[in-house]
Image (cartoon, rainbow, N blue to C red; front, side):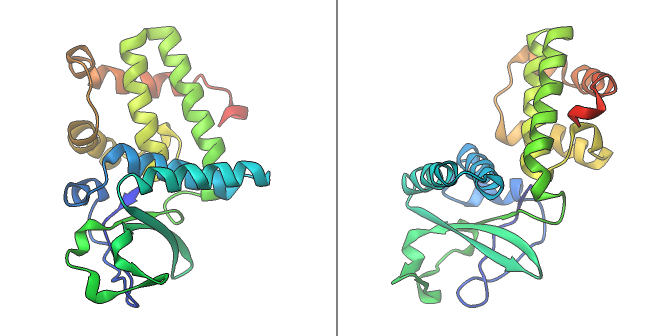
Length: 210
């Protein structure tokens, strides 16, 4: 669900035109860090225990600190957007536009709009149940491919795997897998078969787990 890089008008200029996977090639943050910070942010937003909230927030900050980045939530016409940008753009807690040399170093992640953020945890749980079912029925190679698809569906679109559109599945095959994962040769050779098996298996997952 990572959207393109952007910074707002008061220091960050909102630009949402294209897929975040493409734009990540220009940022200093590794894809796995972006995905993990997004995951932790979603968990933080749905957690009810204060200790859990603090733990998720602390872990996100630690990951970003390793790359001299920071984060903030921006309200974009009623939709919350997680913005990750270099710490050096800040001065006394305020974004300094004169410090921004390359806007593409920032990353935007839409937390609302595509899927229901309040339901993200249950969606992710459903997708993980589906991964486990595929792994049990069809083996580790297909299970590992299912895990890649679960990461993509949850982190990029906040929706169940079986709700992905044909365009989104094409994006997964042609862009996400190529740019952001390291599948084995066996995984690559059966990727199309894996997707079919995953979607077939999804029909056997109980509705209560959806």
